[in-house]
Length: 119
Image (cartoon, rainbow, N blue to C red; front, side, top):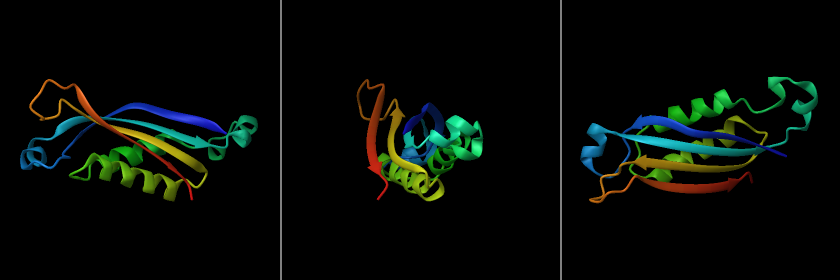
């Protein structure tokens, strides 16, 4: 087993329960960690034998562009899509952070974290 991490993927998205959030948007970061079997790619040195992190980034960016009220919802969509499109991944840990959330206080970010295993 091996781990691939994409750290601080930045997006400008329109998630949130407030109507204003759907209009003005906010900055977000996503951290993604996936577990996969790397034994074949260690020997072959071939991209087809591993997980392409370009595809992982593309999935995150595309799903973050689809509005959700809850960060949990968008994170779940990302997980489902990764498991569907990349069969070699066995576990996913994802963190989705809204930077400077409109919660009436001086808060740098609100983050949700989810961990899922392939069934």
